[in-house]
Image (cartoon, rainbow, N blue to C red):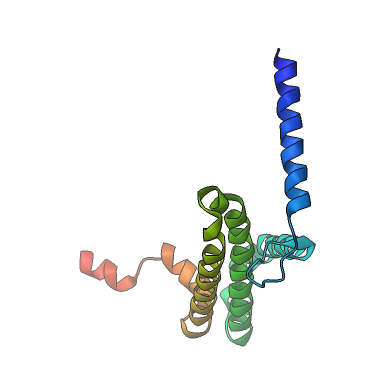
Length: 153
């Protein structure tokens, strides 16, 4: 009984997956960041870059990461985070938005592109204009403001 139910479930999943693979047409729209082998390859490389370079950058002493190199790496990190979230959110939209309405897939991709642009420009601004860049901003979450300690006493 359990074996026959598992076999039926496996057949249904395989049929659905093969139908989805055969019906998926490659799109030429730049908003479809998750389509094709190139999008997947880029997303995996961005993930690897974030997993390896971000911890190294945040653990590096401030004397090495201040100045022009720090600002440049901050902009690079902003682009990496933005591109990673753009492709990843397109995967989420492709999987879940058609369950609500297939007509909302296009507008959701436009909204994702807008959020990605805002994320990139915001992180770039923090990287270039704020003291310490993105690294200093994250450190500020754990380091209390010295003026706030004086007010409490």
